[in-house]
Image (cartoon, rainbow over all chains, first blue to last red):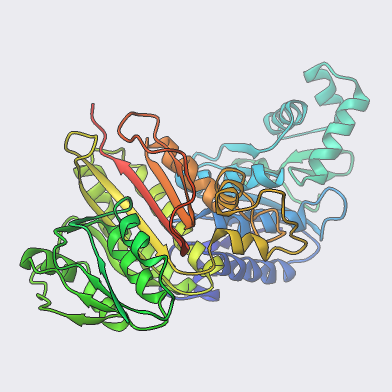
Length: 195
Length: 295
C-alpha cells in the first residue's frame, strides 16, 4: 500500500494553520510526531511518500527533526521500528541543502523523486551500494544474480550489498528479489508492496 | 552614583567595544546613562546591542536619545525606541517615523520563543527577494538560504540564551573596504548565558586545561559542539558558516570576552579570526554580513 503524507498539512495540523515554513526544532518535532501518528495507522509494512511540495522554507533544525529523526527510527540497520519505506517528493534546492547536511551528519540516505518521476539516491551511500541500487532501479526489480552480473561482483557480495540496502530501506525485499523504493511510486511501474 | 556612558558617533560592532570598555568595570546595579546624543549612525548590531545592554543591567538605565532629527527618525523607523522605552528611561525628543525605510528588511524585533522565529521568517521573506536580488545583485537562490541562516541564528536565542534577545536586518553601503559596495547585515544580540556557560551545562562536561570564552566559541562555531548530547545538534551554526562561505560573507560572534570571525575569501574585510580579552559582556552577539555581488 502506498501512502501519501503532505508535510505542509502536517505542519498546519500540528503547529499552526498560518505557518508554511518548517523552521525551529519544536516545530520539526511536532510535525514528525504527526507523521508518526499517520504511520501508526497504516500497518507494519508500508511505502510512504513524504511530500514537501507545499513547504516554503526548511531549516537545518527542522530537517534534523523531521527527516533525520524519522529515518533513524524506521531505517535503523539493527532494529527498525517497522518495515516502512519512504520516498521524498517536492524537495527544492534549498530544502536539499538542509536535508543533505542532516543525512551526512547521521550517516543516512534516502530516495527522492523528482518532478519528472526520476528517482535519486541522496545522502551517505557507498560506491557498491549506489551501483547496486541503480541497477535494481534501472531494471525495476531484480535479484542478486542480476546485480552480480551487471556489476561484475560475486553473488555473495551482491547479496550482502542488497541486504544492506534493504535494511536501510532503500530497496524493498519481496520473495527472492528486490524493488528500488522510488520505482514503486512511479505511475508507469505500479508494483504491489505486498507482492 | 551614576555613570555616563558615551556612545560613539558611529555605532557598529567594532565601536560598540568602546561602550563595553566603559561599562565592564561597573557593578551591575550601578545606575548608568547611555548617551547617544551625538551618535550619527547605528548599524543593526549597534541598535540590538544597545537593547541587550539595557537588559543586562539591574538598575534601569537612562538613554539620552540622538539629537539629530534624521537619526532619531531612523531609529524610530527601525522600531528601536518602541523596545527601548520598555528597557530604558528615555530622555530627549523622540521623532516619530513618517515613512517605511526601504533599506530595512527587518526592524528591531524581539526573540524569546519559537513563534517569534516563525514570525521573523514570514516577515522577511516578503522583503528579502527584492533587497538581495535587485539591490545587491545576488543570485535568486540566496533568498531561501539567507532566511535559513536568519532562522538558525534566531533559534540560538530560544535554545541557548536563557532569556530573550533581538534581531534586525538591513542593507546599507559599506564604506570601510568595499568602496561603496552595498551589504546586507543580520544582527542578533542577547544578554543570556553565552557560549561558554551553555557548553558548561552539557551533561558530563569536563573543563579542559585551557577553557575560556575564546575556546568555547571555537568549539561551537568551528567544531559544531553543543550542550546537547543529541548528535543532530550543532548543525545550525555549521549551516550558517557554509552559507556565509558560499556568498563571500562574514560571520562574527562575540560572547563573554571573545569574538570569533569566519572571514570572507575576498579582501573586503581585514578582521582577525579571534579577538580575546575583550571587555566582558554577557550573552552572544552575532553579525552576518553578505556583500553585493560585483561582476
